[in-house]
Length: 70
Image 1 (cartoon, one colour):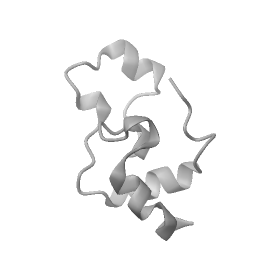
Image 2: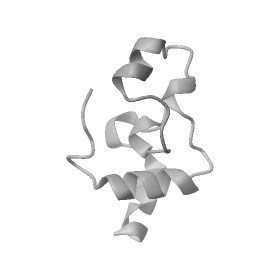
Image 3: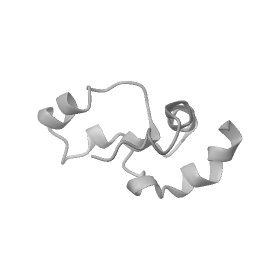
Image 4: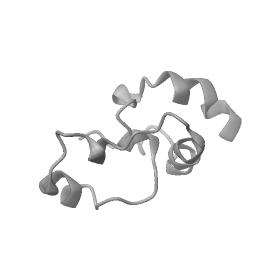
């Protein structure tokens, strides 16, 4: 897994995700399993890089709104 917190500040990833109406947790995906939850630290606060729309940092919603939080 790529750690996007190296690329984007974790506060921005969390703040955008908290306000995003399209946020869908990757952990709710039918492809998620207990091992992936444990490896990622479980279900914590929302963060863009844990959303099914994240698409390796190419989420249109994030890219459009990230500047509001810088």
